[in-house]
Length: 84
Image (cartoon, rainbow, N blue to C red; front, side, top):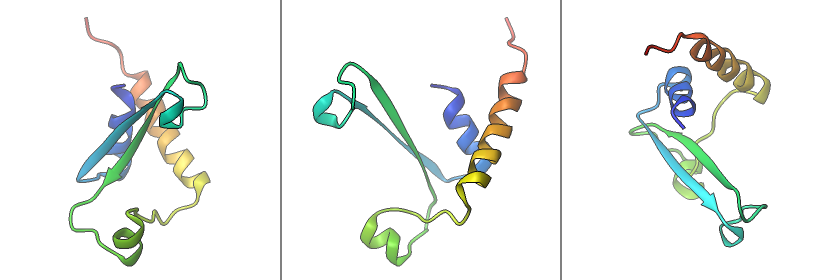
């Protein structure tokens, strides 16, 4: 899990990342043997009504733009040669 956080850092420049994993049915994993990760960017000092009550941040961009930005950056990271 080294590429995902790097992409989020590169695209959104957050102050930090909140990373959590869900494993098992009780953790709401739809397949109990699988693990899935949530990577949530966080910014220092950001506080709005929705942040305060809903504990979330509104990202002012549509999903197509988000996808395009992340995919473009992901592709650039994957194209870098691996150093031995």
